[in-house]
Length: 306
Image (cartoon, rainbow, N blue to C red):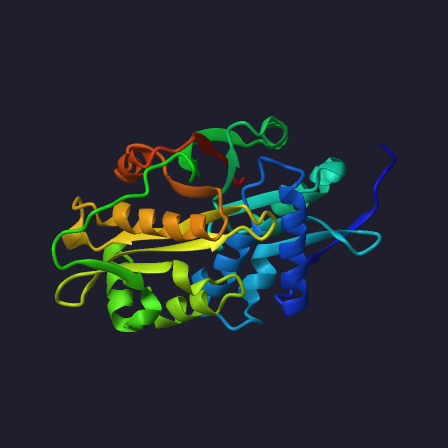
């Protein structure tokens, strides 16, 4: 392979550049089965996780870096989900030789002021594992599971306790009730209406997949949000899924996921993915009980900053 010429730059979080990154990720998804930061995750990152930030906040410049070819096409990105010690690397297969430049930026710029760096990758991603090891990263632990469900093979039936029902969030638009549900489900007191409204304003949002289980007294007790994959019209994913702490182990999460599966199947979706933390996280019992076709492990690699 001839030498490739690239240049790199901090991310400006403009609408144009955001769309460029999403297009890059959609292209990568057709070439690399081990990619972990998809356009849907980019969407969730911008419109939900960091919905409270000003678009010009320094956070975006500090925690996203972009590499472009001499034709100005994006060929690689580094991105931190939370701006803490977490980082993801995605590179087009034809540009693997720019990894040294990527790690140079990581070590010389992004790592400054941090004690440790952590990168998540699929356990089967041998090429990226080799690069990580070469630059001093070591395996830390099995961190996450990613399951795929074939909607033609799984049971979509469910039953709810008397008086409970499933409906789209838009049928009631109880924002404060949804915020209370999410805060309880994930022990996240910082979650607020801006996060929810940001999620619902994302360009990939589909109203009929934002589902909630409603109790007889109109309380939201469980929910999930489904999405279509931008790069493949036959696939989708569900993220997030949560149950109020006072209503767990009563089958509500399984029911709302199956309802979402059913709606997605009716719209032509064949394969749906759901991610969860690795065992012993109790959520794995739920996702295994839904009969996934297969499960992939996500591993965490880390490196101390000297």
